[in-house]
Length: 73
Image (tube, rainbow, N blue to C red):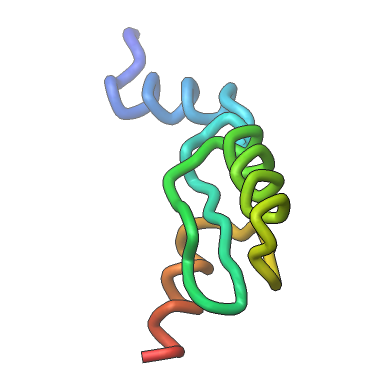
């Protein structure tokens, strides 16, 4: 019996590390600086922002970063 298409997608998703999924955000004390990044991109973006003097930098999953932004409104 052939696997269902949804089963194939689920299996492919499990093989991709969360670090390689575009689900990471960089936040600062001020705002969400960037989102929808793979982890390596987020680390690079955080280093760029740190070099520019942006304070309070942190990496979060996009879902968490959305909640942080919503709580400030």
